[in-house]
Image 1 (cartoon, rainbow, N blue to C red):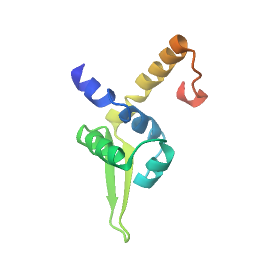
Image 2 (image 1 turned 120 degrees about the vertical axis):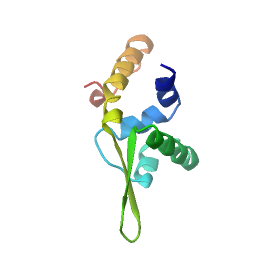
Image 3 (image 1 turned 90 degrees about the vertical axis):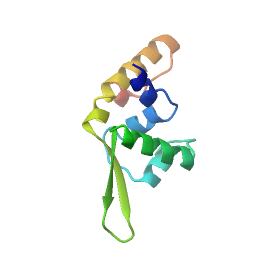
Image 4 (image 1 turned 180 degrees about the horizontal axis):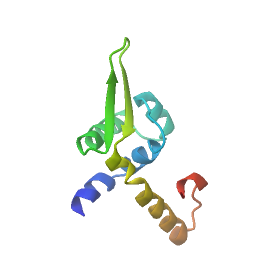
Length: 103
């Protein structure tokens, strides 16, 4: 449980994982999609998620260099858990959840 909370127990890591649920994204795209996250926090969170095996950082040998982030199988396995958390949040805090979140 402690290892899981180290991955999910921060403000931004679950948001990053959820944002990558159905797409690959570059750093700038993630920065634009996730409101209120600083570039420093995004950078460190991506690095930690990669080290934990939750996301894959894919470098392309192009000029200019291109890097894309996507979920690994381990990361994809977290999506149903986050959907359950969203349902719990809606049930107990009466906040609406976007329909695509509840799969």
